[in-house]
Length: 237
Image (cartoon, rainbow, N blue to C red):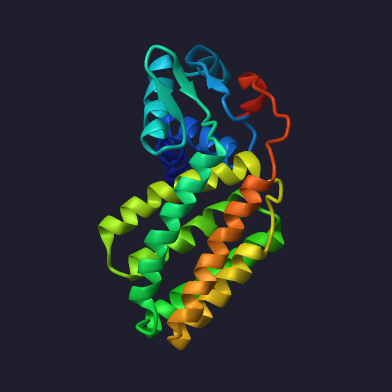
């Protein structure tokens, strides 16, 4: 009869389904900039790399496509997005408009609990920078903006912003060579200060400047050379 420890270990192992394992690995590769813009994710090659069925790969690619992390083309397959400068500017412009409204809704209205949540998040970002965790830094930086939308009590706006943030996270991974920086946490901290003070003009300027700088860092550099060999990218995943 299996011991409780063995049973727990088996249950924990079974919680990570093939779909989730592949999804996590591809998402990580995208956020770490391991895949070049325009690279094709071939089902056959991915199935071999992950030792799973093509059906599993197909489901994961469809999920990533729905999230905007991959571009799906009929009769061609799945590709890493290859946005033009105009595409990038359009998405950041949308973020400017949406997040200005969120800032206006929150400024001077934060509860004690909301202030604590935002301060705790900024501290988590600072810890990720100190630990040198690129993927965690990118994840936390994006989630800060979604947390603001959540605190504003606007689920539909939060859902729309999530698609925009997912795209800009990917743009950063594809084009921004300064992958590990404390800029985001510092800028977020200044925004929280302004929101707590109830100074709308300062808060709007802080948010606008922050997003402008994110956009500028992405547009300033082209992507570096990366491999399109999927077996190499996902070795050991």
